[in-house]
Length: 73
Image (cartoon, rainbow, N blue to C red; front, side, top):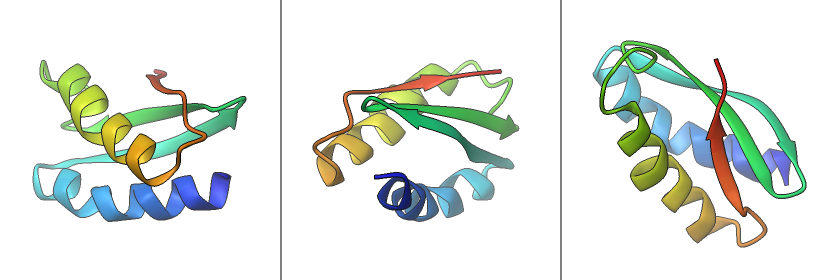
């Protein structure tokens, strides 16, 4: 499942990078994906919305085994 998560994050990455940010995969354990938002995304007040409405939604749509996405710092 980690490979699928990495491939999906690669689809999202150009949009984040266009705004000066990025996403880094930290781990995948028991269906929970842990990521770190970096650059402009790391301190953005909209980071939670990006994480839940963007990253988590796309991962769950593409990979049914994904239960949740959590941000780590």
